[in-house]
Length: 560
Image 1 (cartoon, one colour):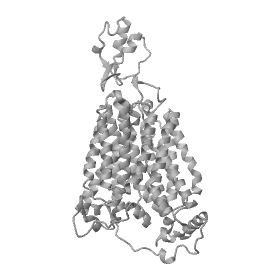
Image 2 (cartoon, rainbow, N blue to C red):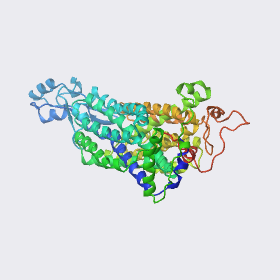
Image 3 (cartoon, rainbow, N blue to C red):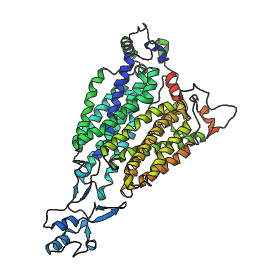
Image 4 (spheres, one colour):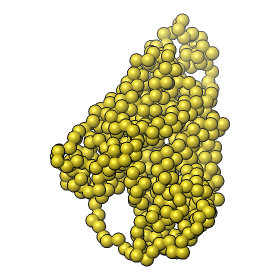
């Protein structure tokens, strides 16, 4: 295939066709926003204690049968034990009073043999209250959260191959249908195991939607609109869905009803099938040139421009010469590539642990969990806007390390905030979320600029897999808070600060052209170039990121 952008230059850079496609595709990302983190509410653990059956106990014994223990300096009722019911019943029948006649701390304790009693102050029901996922079964909640991210890993591995074979548009809408069905079936789960299995399918379909829609947008839109779509549009519309989720959950406090309602939202995307086009680039690679021309001519009609009689010349459609296919083994052949890849893997893992850890932790914060989730989502909007602006002006290495230090530093400060100043702790956590979101958006661009064109997809694929491992780990990091509430912050903060130090050993890419070959990349060593005679990269246009420069000049785009 020849230069697609040159062949379709007559369409212009903007116009009704491109703007309509831009907004319609971005609305798809809204569904990934509110379907991605509903486990925050569906998996929340309300206040609970051992259920006391309806037996003949005096009021004094009913009020004292649950032991009191000290948690983070505060006296609270035990959630997993009670004083032995038979002993308490005998003492109550004998007329003894707790505290006056009996030292209750000397009484024998037992587990919650009759189940648990849950507070319905905030939630009517969650999977925790449905299947008693507390005490010895508490580990099942982070496990359930992890299955979503395992689905992300599976979906990211297969969605690219499916869209290459069957088309971007088909995979987007099939994945939307699969997500709708998986969430709906999950709302009818009869067991925790079924919930986890369906959550895996939810994750696989959701990441498939994101990747396929992202690729479709980069291939359909013009150069100018492509940059806006890839650097800002998709992220902001994801945030819209994320910010919508807590308000839906606020109105629906039952987890089964919540999931059923969320599943039906995918129905609104059915009409978009007739408005979102297939990728003409993909059609041409499949030899379906006539179909591609029909789409381009329709775009010309909507943009009110005249299409040439022949859009794609036969000489442009000749097969490209075969090129060498690179694999992960090629990354291991070079010491420099191994070092850079290892550092990138650590960065992606640390950032994803922090980002998803804080996102999943909103239900554990003091205050209203719905407002906390909304604030967590809201902090991402300025982060994406500011990061897009800073990427065109600031060095990547210093920029990424700065926000990693901000994100990790404030998390380490939270442990020093007294319990009486919970709003300060909440503000610090939101600041940390802002830092992680900034780092999240920067590391995508930075990593793509580090790898040469021939290895970029391979390198980004490896980093994406590392990110999934980090997100799978995140629920267990938050689970540590059941032992000590500051442990997750210490772990995430320390890991992030350490990754910021690692980041300083990566080469700088600001105002540099993207490397095309492995040889060009190998000129870079750590903080500077090994060879003084040859630069690592040639200077590019100021104010433009290398990856944006490629998006403006080449039809080949980054797919994640």
